[in-house]
Length: 269
Picture 1 (cartoon, rainbow, N blue to C red):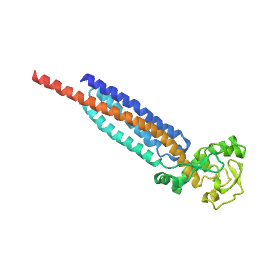
Picture 2 (cartoon, one colour; picture 1 turned 60 degrees about the horizontal axis):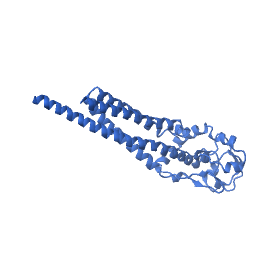
Picture 3 (spheres, rainbow, N blue to C red; picture 1 turned 90 degrees about the vertical axis):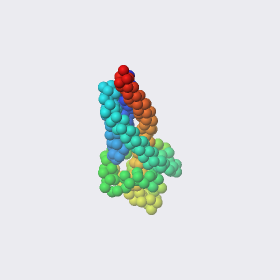
Picture 4 (cartoon, helix red, strand yellow; picture 1 turned 45 degrees about the horizontal axis):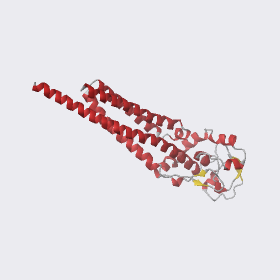
């Protein structure tokens, strides 16, 4: 029984370690400028990671100090958390399937359309109440100002691989036909009717294209890339947690069997 309990405790120590990548993925998302403005995924990931850490700690204590009720509570709670983590992994995968960029003529960067993304993601940015807060957060960042420092000539900018967020928020859509002055200052549109975003563009550095659908699409494209990277970590951790949980279940069952067999022998003698 003692050996099995020690094994259970060691297994739960591994589960505690597995919570670290989950918490780390959430913290990484929280430090990204776009995610810090939207705040959708990072807190569920961090909270889930912390809960897994606490539950695994309870299992660790229950294993080494031989507390059966704590081990049973651990098995139930960890199963619930594994199911929640699996649901989160599936949700992130489903909402990030769509959203690839479109090439623009004579441009190295891609441009993005809001309708290319999943309805669930679009609803996060479509309401004016939500977007006003996000837009204020984005406009206070230095992402557009950095373009002016990096690219002086038009051809250098057109050949640049800028982020989706910069492509959508810091310049007008290519189809509008604006003339390049610098990355955040464009004049003389050829076709303002090409897209509603053509009318939304402003050379005012606090406005730019932050009110454009292209900016919303660029934000979602950035989120999509970061979420998919975080989801890889979550998937790997989920598989490892499932393996650890199954091993823990087997060890707990063996411990109970040993205990029953020991009591049977004591009663027989």
